[in-house]
Image (tube, rainbow, N blue to C red; front, side, top):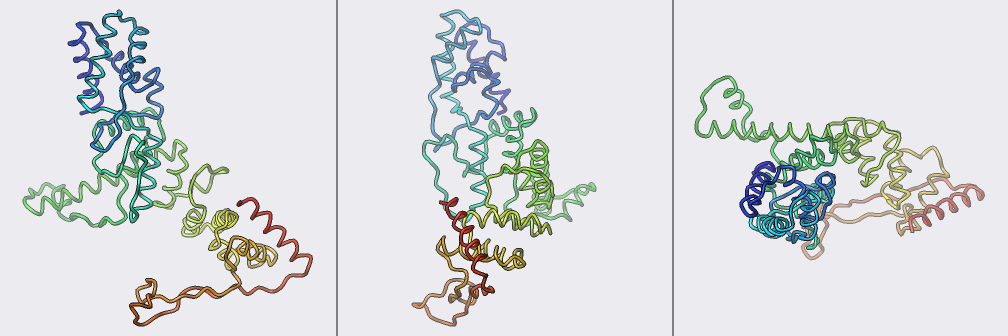
Amino acid sequence: MTIKELAYSAQQHLQASTGGSFKRAHVYELLAASFGFNSHAAFGVDTVLTELRQNDRRVVPQSALIKRRCIELGFQPDTVILASSALESFLAERQIGVASISSLVSRLRVESSSQDEELEYDEDELFDPTDEAFGPILLDGLAAAASKGNALAHYALALIHAPDDEDDPDAGSSYWYSQGQQGRVLTGVEKEWAEAHEARLAQAEKYSRHLREASRLGNQDALLDLADRFDDPSFFEQSRHGVDADPAAIAAIAERMGRTSDAKHWLTLAAERGDTDAMLQLIEEHDQGDLQRCWTWVYLSQLVGTDLTRDAHYAINEDGSDYDDDVGGPAYVAGRDGVDLEPLAPAQDAAARLAAQKLFDQIE
């Protein structure tokens, strides 16, 4: 069911229950009022309708706001009471609720970056996106918002259609898909392979299209994903970045793209936040020509609890997993040697220690 179909059904239900006439625009206004919004325009900024599922939190329609909106739209008092009751029962029967686009995006981003972890969600949240079956009303609402230039809606649709990293890129059969496109009649498993390949292509097209449009509209997370997935440099070519992401991960993307100065910039941000791996990488790959800067990272590492000048070796199994003494078997050495730097002159050493302390104070 689309949102238009839902609105039409609500319109018919209201008219049958009240004996009055309701314009479709009025129905949209009353649906928005049901969930606490003063207008449909305000509703559409960051909210979409959705079909509630078993574990989704139910929201009681706001009867007082429905009645007030009815009065503002010019309905008579007796119609107002009937309309409020009718709309509440309609929404309850159809199990219609709302989802915040920004919350949906946040959840989808966590889910996509933590596929191997058991995710827990706040029971007070309205929408839990771990269920892969996104309802047609939700998708239709996101598409409608996206068509009006809502960057976050485009990004939500991109995340919904994002290919799973574990998916087989050769799912289905490009050969049988090509044969079908050329007019060959396919049956049985050949048809299944062709359809599977077609579905994968359609999903990839939707992902790319919505991600690029969200990026064009300025969504920072989409721009970063565009760099990660397609090596698009737009994210790094901006003068400002308003993205909530691990700077070390951004540095890795920049490094993979051959953007050395950007990699150093983001590694520095990570190091200044206490990331000792970033400090080590800066010492070994970027700041090796600045001895005082390298010692600043060493002193900062000590302040956050890791001394980079000390060896850090440990035993692992052949497959790279941690070695277990109780299990036994061949052990292999992993880890790193301690950083070995030339000593600084007293004045430079004092300056490096002071700089490290200032950075540490900012972390705390």
